[in-house]
Figure 1 (cartoon, protein in one colour):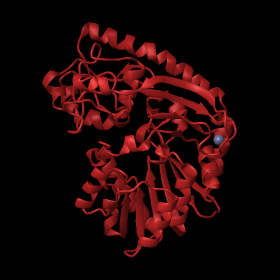
Figure 2: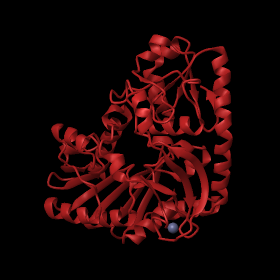
Figure 3: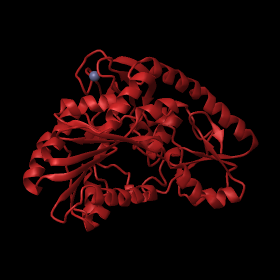
Figure 4: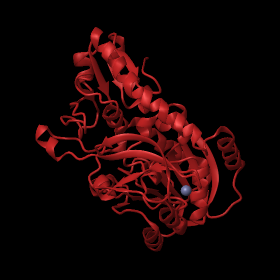
Length: 406
Ligand SMILES: [Zn+2]
């Protein structure tokens, strides 16, 4: 189910340097129906390592991707933040590259198509989504979507069938890709001569700075710096053309590639900053690992104190919540339940720690004194949704980089 990774995913160097182990962890989407499923539950090592040659930070073990994606239960339209982001991207590119109705915009791992949807008023769209059940939802909803894993061969096939793409988006998917160079080669093949490859990926820098160890999970094989991304694009015959940071998911990069340069000044600026501030060396990563190990005891202690004075529940049965509760060994003794808006998770138990998942309405029904926001990357959105809870005296807890009441 999990295989060790012998070589760097970008440059192929063997003997990666171990940085942090989070122990044996269940796959973050393997929610259980009840105690009858406990015996079937599987766990696999979750740890990151550093490549001294290209500075890429990556997992030491990999799950079979087919186990992970075939029945993936995350539907993006459930987040208002993501729907809004789709509209912003469509407006941005409609003006930046003057999209025409004959031109093609594609998204890799397009989920339910909610990012591509607003592009439809400007151009042709095509989604590529490996999860068959989700591709079906997108197609029914009017976003043409092929249910396939993307790679170099698929890039060639899609170009033949649909023509070159002016824009290919890969939002939070590159980190999931086992064969990175082959994947980016497929993008290069499918892009038009002046086409843009738009990558969004969680950025290594805020992960390290803010101790966001809970963004590490089996499906995230890579933790990108700009330095590593630049090398990846080069290996695939592309140029890293532009870089910017966005606040999504605790701090993400938009890295944009083209088939040829020249690159914008942002690329050289980020490369110089990462080198000067130590994000391309191992020292900073070892400090991150040390901070994470401290939180492993600090967070349960913090919750134990809160529990003495009241009741504690959680919000957001997201992947990061599964990692955090398993690593810190937080179970129903500290958190009674976790509320989540996804009907696919409600009524189930979280992987590993078996915390019951309930509907969001439970927050107001039970009014726990403290609500731990496990999906802290959507903190503002959750606080807004749960304003009545706060008005009623409820308090939110943010677990990282150190536990605090907000
Ligand atoms: Zn490397």
